[in-house]
Image (cartoon, rainbow, N blue to C red; front, top):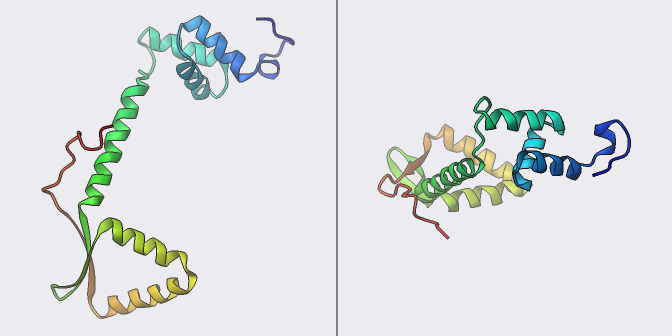
Length: 151
């Protein structure tokens, strides 16, 4: 590859740097691009970081495992929300009870309308003064099993 100029940062594109990393380290585009991004575009730092990882001296980058962990955490959170309820209570008497997703959708819809937003805030203050309670409860019998939502 022939490149013009002496200053690497001015004449080399990101793709050129990724190609160099791929050729020298024998890795794919995604891993090379990620290493370059983590090194903030510094080609030498990216190569040094990858060399350290290869020699067991640097951070261990297992991108696929990190992604699976994030996805499992997200699935667990969504499952917990789906099996939760929001209840308005006064003196241990339930006035209204909604599923958490429906309650969140309703709250978002109300908050988007400026006229309803003010009415809601006044209602919330009135409810607090009259000893109403908002309770969020999760049903523990529906834990995330790790198999739900598999495609």
